[in-house]
Image 1: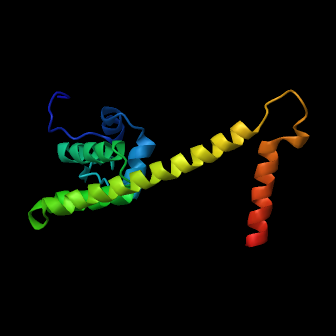
Image 2: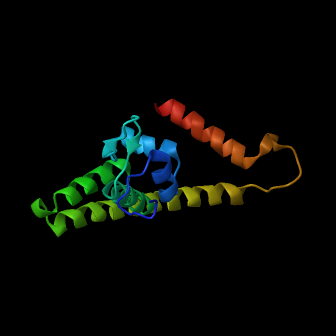
Length: 148
């Protein structure tokens, strides 16, 4: 009977099949991304093949960096494909690429600042009382406190 692909799955079975925890699946439910198709006579959530496919969609979208809000947007587009264009879907991915490019830029700036701090320090065995890294970080704090 478990070989039937149309058989309903309970929450633990679906979570295991998807490679996630039951808590993660419940979290997705709380955010409205997934919902059990039906309930058993005992009140257990039962998930269909379509629910499993929806969960897979969510996990694939997360894997490529989409937020839950963006995933909800993609699920809406997917659910109403006949009312949307490929261009609309492409815009979502384009916005995500721009966001990632900005994050990369920000990380490069942070890395350069850290490298500057790292290179300014002698790294010797003496006391850290005159450590240039700690002094630079203290100056940054004082400067930001004075400005605002």
